[in-house]
Image (cartoon, rainbow over all chains, first blue to last red; front, side, top):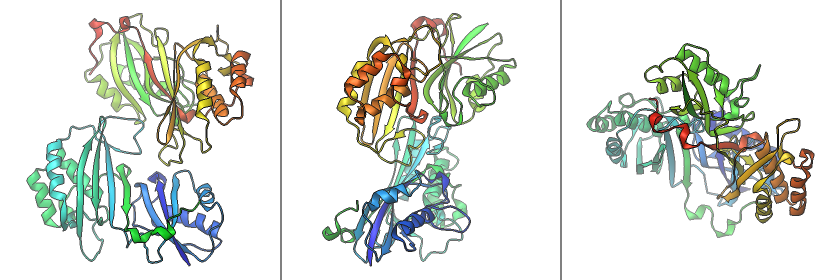
Length: 255
Length: 255
C-alpha cells in the first residue's frame, strides 16, 4: 500500500465545499470518483481540512492510499477526468505516516475585498463600496496575532477540544482596487477567517471601536462578533508540511 | 439637447454582445432600460462598435442624448440600476458632434490565453495545453502590422466599404501562466481579432508555416485563415478620442 498526496486548486462556486455530504456536490466526491475510475478500486481521499460552500482554494492537499501501481500518465489522466474548475497541480508519493490533515504545520488563507465595482471580480471578491478605516483595521489585526482562544470567531455548535490557534500572520495588503487580508496559523476553526474579516470590516466602517474589537476577542462568544464575510472572497492559499512527509526517496512527481 | 459619453466595463459571459437584437439579452438593452428609467424618456444609446456574444470589455464607450437635466447623483443611480456584471466607470458631457463610433481614433484589444490549467480563468482566457512556438507567432504578428486589407480575418457575409485597417500594434506578452496578445488599430473588422488569434495559434502549433501565414493575409479570403479563437478570451481594453470630444468646458464628470 502506497500513500500519495495530491495538490489541488479549485474554483469553489459550484461546490458545497470540500467534504463529501449527502445530496450536494463536493470537491472530494468529484475527486474520489475520478480516482476510483482510474485506479479501479473505491477511493476515499482525506483532505487537509474542510472548506465551506463556495470557498476557493489555490492550494489544497488531499491524500489517498492504493495497493495498485499508478497507471502510466496518471497525472494527465486524472486531470482529464476532472471538471475544468478543479485542477491537479502535483501528485507525489509520501511517507506512509504522512497525513494531509494531521501532519500539516500551517495553513494560510487570503480574503479578497473589491473596493471598486469590477464586473470581473464578482465571484472572487467581496465588493464593499463604503470607505474603510484601514488604520483601525490594522489595530484589530494586531490584536488577533498570537496564540489565543478564537472561540468568538468559531461557528456556533462546533465542538472541538479547544479553541486555541496560533495566528502567526494577520495583515492587510492594499492594492489599487482591492484589499487582501492574509492570515496564517497552525490551525483554523470553522468559519474563523470569514468571522474575523466580517468583524474587521465592522471595525473599518467604524461601527465598532478597537476597544470593542478587543472585548469581542476576550468574550470567547461567537454572538459577540460580526456577521461572517461571504464565502466567495475566501481562498485557501497554502498548507505547509514537514520535510519527512516527502523525503528524497519519494521526491519524484507522478507524470 | 446634451450629449453624454458613458465609459463602461462588462463581463461578457451572460450577454449576446453589445448591440440590441431580438430574443437575446445584450448590454445595450440593459443600459438603455436603466437610462430610460432614470431619465424618464426612451433612450437609444450608441456604442463605439459591436462586441460579439461572450466578449468582455474593460473599456467601452456609449453615448446618449437627453433634453432633460441629469438627476442628482445620476452616476450612483445608474450604477445601482445595472447588474453587477456591467459597471459604469465615468459619465461626462461631450461636444454635440462627438460620436462614440465615428469620432474614435483607435481601439485596442487583448486576447488572453491560459497556458496552465487554472480553475479561476475558465471564463477569462482560452486554455491551450499544447506548446506554442512563440518565435513563429512573433513572425506572424510582424506580418500583421501595417495598413492593409484584412478581409482574410473578417467574418464572411459582412459587407463593408473596404477591408483596410491600420494595425499599429500586434504583440504578444508572455506572463508566468498566460500569453496576452495586444492589438491596436484605427478600426477592426467583425471577428477580426479572434480570427487573427486562431490563425496565429495554428502558426504557433506549427500546423501552418510563416510563409503560409503570409499567403493567408494576401489571399483576402476568410476561408484561408484558421478557426476563430473562442470569445471568452477577448477583451476590448481601450478606445481613444480626440481632445475636442471632451473639451475643458465639459471636463467635469457626472457624480
